[in-house]
Image 1: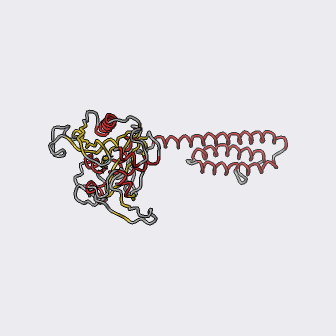
Image 2 (image 1 turned 45 degrees about the horizontal axis):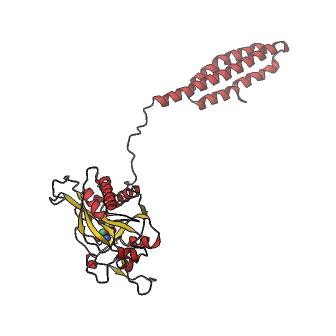
Image 3 (image 1 turned 120 degrees about the horizontal axis):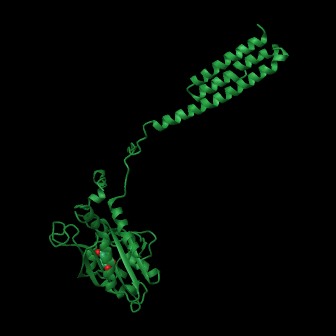
Length: 352
Ligand code: DAH
């Protein structure tokens, strides 16, 4: 058989084969392998072309054209199959059952959250911040003068009995100064009023300490203190702020009641009740059938306190209030024993 004839036959055979092999490839990789086995160095077509040398000159051009046409056919078949394979794969992805994004993940460790006291404290501070109060912090270890003396508790004043104190020795404390764990956040009033010029509206929260321990008293508990100093501040301003606070805390329709009370650093002083959030004032177990719940102490800052802090009581007036965070948290979450807040038992904390 002459060379022209045999190369033509081989090309024809090849033309029939490669298409079927490309179409049988089911992955991009096998398709590429097939292509290499056709066009590559050791490929089928390359093999055939080796016969070219024996083809008589007059046939070469014709055979050459056939070869080029076949090469083009191989390329376009390859591209078409590649495209088809990619489309198939994409369609398979689109038709596959979707990932269930709503399925809860398997957690490696249970997720934590803030302690109910911290939540309550942050909520209380946020209300006063919204009312324009600046939030500051004060130290838990205080000077006696900030905690008592400058707040107009005279030495051995019977009022100090209300706040049975933990005394502590602090290295480096001013000589002769007595130091203690602050019994209330009111000490922050002294610090701020002594160090910044009025007007000021300040709120502060943190731990306080008293030698007390029963189901409603813990030796450490938390308070929020607020005070405002300016010219011509009246009791009316105090009422407006506390009414706004009660409404924000317990919702519209919450009423407040101011009862005269005594604190050495205010005059007049008052205790504030809110209409019971549980019964709306009808009387229930929580409010002990009174319809009212006591939530804070307050009053107009005593002139003696201004003097102690270097402010002129003729020029300035102001109000102050203090409330127990633990008590508010207990009311809010229906907790009846304050000690639960400090035991950190997971079975308790996970309920909030
Ligand atoms: N410091 C007081 C206490 O711990 C609470 C208090 C009462 C704070 C009246 C005040 C206030 O600022 O005006 O019992």
